[in-house]
Image 1 (cartoon, rainbow, N blue to C red):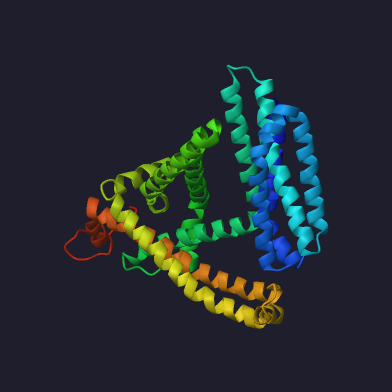
Image 2 (cartoon, rainbow, N blue to C red; image 1 turned 30 degrees about the vertical axis):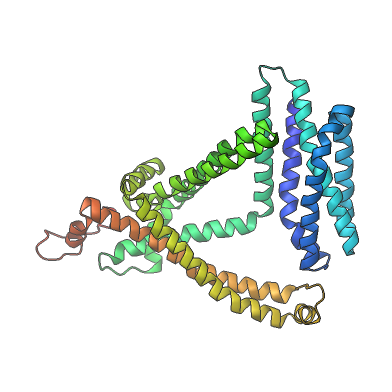
Length: 386
């Protein structure tokens, strides 16, 4: 049983690690163009959909072990063929083999779990296989996309930490340098990372719980239940993220722990969830529009600089962009992130300050901290968080 589950996890890990790069590999590494890469991904998915209805019949007739061996060989041949594909037919054929082979692996492994498990422990065994399969996909995708995700995560965290300190001083009318803001924010960065990962884990767990019943049932009823469960999980995850959206500034400014900041955020958001949701949604929409405004000129410049891709577009042939296009659009992405991360973080901090003013009369504390006459003595080094 453990070997079967380990094989399921490893298979999912390989799929999660390689599939995100399939488009880039076909378009850039093999130099077959973006159109061919799109066709390859479509063929990969279609091959999986075509063979899945027949996999159950083959497993019933031949047993799961022979089907698993054949699927493994087909997937391996497809992977090797993709590695050597230098033409469009070769890439499409390799994608068909790879998609068909990988699609049959999981049903065969699931049948083997049925054979190896008792009726009492079967549900638990299936749940464990589903967990390991999704864990393998997630870990594989995370490792495959790790550098980009790491840079994005660190950029958003550092900007959020610095903006929190800067705005907390700004509302007091006190200037602060970047070095001073970094010195104050740095001790809380590790806890901020933990808070971010905890929120991501909570969202993933909610989505998994919503999808799990339908995936375990299977068939048409399972598909309908998966859709309903997915929609319900999405609503629950959004509700939870808005409820805890003010946890980051609470953590940075109130000097509490991770769970204390979650409780503070829930308290501040209580009763005004829709208001926080609307402002957050509007902010993200404006950030998206602003990002597109910046990205479009860089994309046009990248196409113009990349002579081969521009010539392909004019001639109507398969478009293939090279390193000049990637470098120019990459610079545009960096500039976009540098301008949009502070906006998102700043809005969150201002929402936190606004809620504390509305609920806890923080404006009176700010007036005293700023030394305005009539509000009492000004504390020496007080910040928004007290």
